[in-house]
Image 1 (cartoon, rainbow, N blue to C red):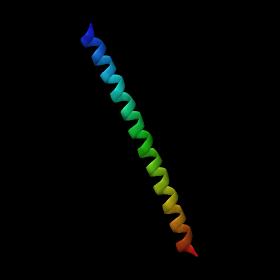
Image 2 (cartoon, rainbow, N blue to C red):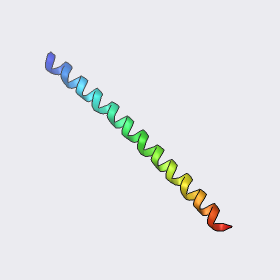
Image 3 (cartoon, one colour):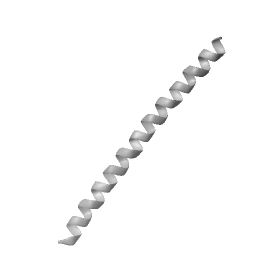
Length: 45
């Protein structure tokens, strides 16, 4: 029973880390897209 509980807790911890990682990746991509748009706006002038 303890082994099952440990497995579930480990799986939950990994899931949380994956969600945090995915959110950071998304935020980084949005930031890069904004920087690119700003750079393109400056280069057009």
